[in-house]
Image: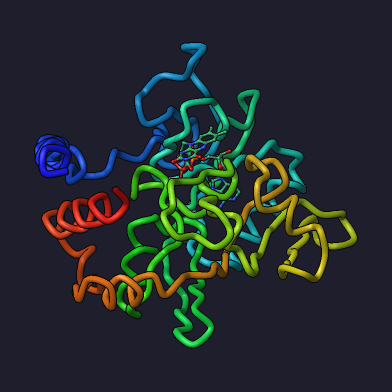
Length: 266
Ligand SMILES: Cc1cc2nc3c(=O)[nH]c(=O)nc-3n(C[C@H](O)[C@H](O)[C@H](O)COP(=O)(O)OP(=O)(O)OC[C@H]3O[C@@H](n4cnc5c(N)ncnc54)[C@H](O)[C@@H]3O)c2cc1C
């Protein structure tokens, strides 16, 4: 047991610097502000080594702006794909196809909108990162029941790909979409609807939400999500008398928590 703890501790100390490196640069590059653009993934090369080109990129910062971008793109019959600030997926998922497409970045849709401590839910815009989500929950003394592998991933990206993590005590599994209570999706619409359709989907109301949750970005742009969080922190505090609420604030704290959790798991 002591040997395992020492090995794990050493490994964590060795890998910790990479955990704390700054986030990658925006994967969208435009030669002329927001026109003539390319997008790549976080390693800078797609599996087929091709370059993905798009004729433009939009950076909505509010729900209304996102709705306007989707409506304009639909009216102009442009192919559109949502892109994130890091494009951590290796496949060409965010590439709109052709060269006249539009990239819709969620870079500025990055606000935590509310945390409901009673209901244990947090509502965020889809460009919020896993790190922001963890911090928002921790501020309320709560925690996420899932944890995909890197905290620079966005909520929209994790949902679209069905990303999951390992989860020691999760009630419903380790996938991010298993905890979505509500979400808003903005999709192309008919001319009669102003070329845009905004769906406000709630768990239990219809099966549409199941399709919207893991859609690989092909059904529309997710604007916001209300997701369940858990009282895992309180549970751990009772069990270990630790102050986990402040634990995500520095890398040393993260390493410390991992050691404790791994020891607990063994
Ligand atoms: C199929 C697949 C499964 C994966 N499973 C896991 C896993 O289980 N665990 C794990 O840790 N990692 C997993 N990964 C790797 C990585 O964690 C995910 O790709 C990650 O969730 C991507 O996050 P991102 O924010 O960088 O999104 P990106 O890579 O930029 O985007 C991913 C997809 O999501 C779409 N998208 C992003 N935001 C929105 C939005 N707001 N509205 C609509 N569509 C949007 C994009 O158009 C794109 O199609 C997986 C990758 C893929 C390709």
